[in-house]
Length: 253
Ligand code: PGA
Image: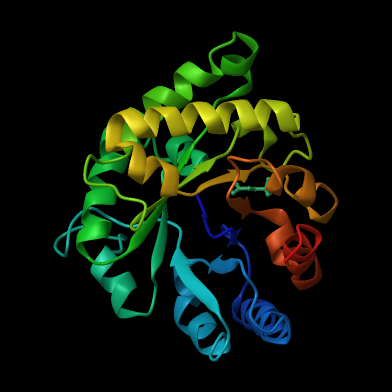
């Protein structure tokens, strides 16, 4: 089953205007020089930079995504951004349920599910994040936790066309620590099985499952060559043009 590899950058709460524009321009120029890369590039800057990054990416095959969205179309929700607003500004993707939002904002599977439905209805594709904490891993609950997160956060209406899953062990994010390739493949294969039960085999076989957590140029090939790993969600290393591009190139793109 051919699944197009996704190389996605999650900029988190980083970059002021000048840095963000420079980063986006650098990525755009590198991607243009790759000709027709067989992978799909995505960058997810903070809300404040979406508009200027969109301009900086002009002409390059790099999709734009946001890092969160509300589940309502509009209304009295001070400080929030709706999926329609993101679509309007040129986003095609939105990350939902990142572990930092699950932790910092107590986002539940139920809330993420509602957000995903709203995002899809607005015409956005979602990148829904799951992953266990170190404590959960140490007590042997990795697959169980990921299963519950998939069942709870991924809406029944999800399809391979409107949804991407990102498996990110919480303890591997920003720490330089990573699971072994075998561990990653085991979780991804288990996640695909759960997706097959929930959404049907055809959707599950086509749905991309990214790995995230301390992905860098030196380990990109190891993870991206695994059968059930269909790309990477990259935090720290996505803030440097050379590293972000080297992750794709080292993986053979
Ligand atoms: P990291 O972050 O690459 O800095 O570990 C990944 C993520 O949180 O998406």
